[in-house]
Picture 1 (tube, rainbow, N blue to C red):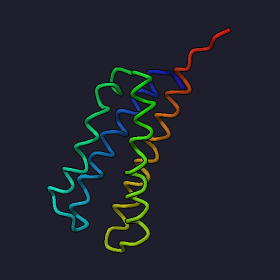
Picture 2 (picture 1 turned 45 degrees about the horizontal axis):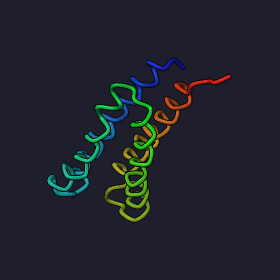
Picture 3 (picture 1 turned 180 degrees about the horizontal axis):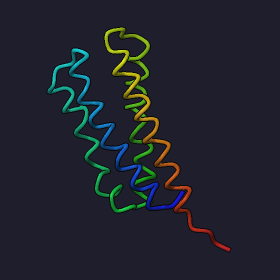
Picture 4 (picture 1 turned 60 degrees about the vertical axis):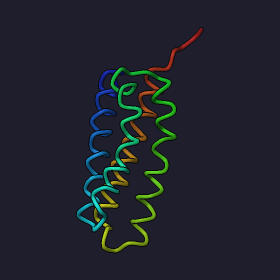
Length: 110
């Protein structure tokens, strides 16, 4: 995969993750909580759009609490299973595309 395609896919999945967090309103979560959950995701956006490897590296760690939350809700909250499954798949996809970008953009030294 090309570097530009990996970067573009990462930014699109970032947007999908933010929208999925806002979709938790449909599962009964108050909208201020959903907005507060999505706000920290604004932190890596600038670096993701610019293709900064350092941002991609720490943003992978940044995605882990969202993975844990979605997995927990998927297992214990029957009312939120569909939105939890959607969030889990999107966050996992975002995580994987960030790893892909880091692998594609790696500098080879001889």
